[in-house]
Length: 246
Image 1: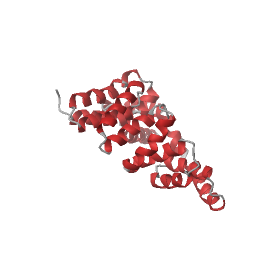
Image 2: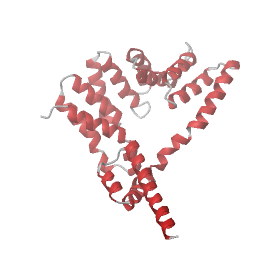
Image 3: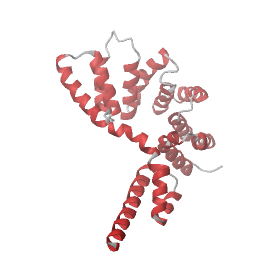
Image 4: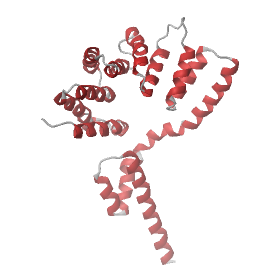
């Protein structure tokens, strides 16, 4: 009986460590946690309580994959009988959420017509084009959004348009729009793109400043936002490591 309990306890101790390590590799929190996990099974339990359980809210999007795929299939069938702009817009949004940017763009191509006066399909198509690396096509679509509403999507449209300008050699437009966007927006994506643009212009000190601004937000952020922003923290840290120090 004693040996059985010892075996069961050892198995659970190993399982806790495995769960903690897998989460650590996927989410990449502060590096000291790996020593806490490996030191003792209690360390793995503490890690799960502090990092894994609070991350559960971020897993909701993973559970939404299956309903989203189901709705995609429904719309793909519905469009055969009713190829309306509304159906194509909804399908395009679902493809965007699913990371299928080529199909999203194709849906918005069909949703947009000469009579389309709503800005959202232009903006969403611009987002898909940015993700596909077609910045020349993205710029006019994003211009539609920014001209209609300079604050569209909480100023993200303006930041993406500045990035599209930067990627198509329109450096003066990019610089002016980045300055305007970062004056009113705190989106890490915009800060990071601005830092990359400044690096490309040889303005390394300014690039370091904007990359550092992303990391400076970390201490005052609520835990759930800090976990959501981790990819941008990693990108900013990697950029700072590449940039020459003053």
